[in-house]
Image (cartoon, rainbow, N blue to C red; front, side):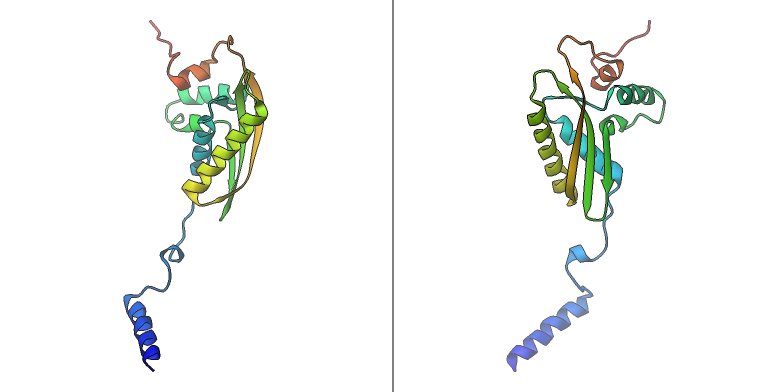
Length: 160
């Protein structure tokens, strides 16, 4: 009989506080596609063999968009990144430019691992796939594209 009384008291205590379940079951969290795209873009750029994200045309359009007031903020991070986010899962597509001499297979595996770890850790979403398209190889003696210079801040031009 003591056991039954204790259970009723515990049930009554939680009911009187108005809590009906664990904190994670009280409400919902929605994560927007651009949030996941930024996380994936930053994680992919952390891999040393990645020169840039996005193909040549994507980078050129991104460079133009950055020069238009009000449109350039944060767009460089998601350049070359496309995501699809569901309630519990996400899929990521990346277009990358790899440094010459790097093993493309190893680089793709490193990118995939880094993106999956970052997105799953930060969002709690399960990453079901990370598709990687290698659009170009950056050669050491190639000049930097105009869009690449403005992203890194090293090649900014000054009009006199």
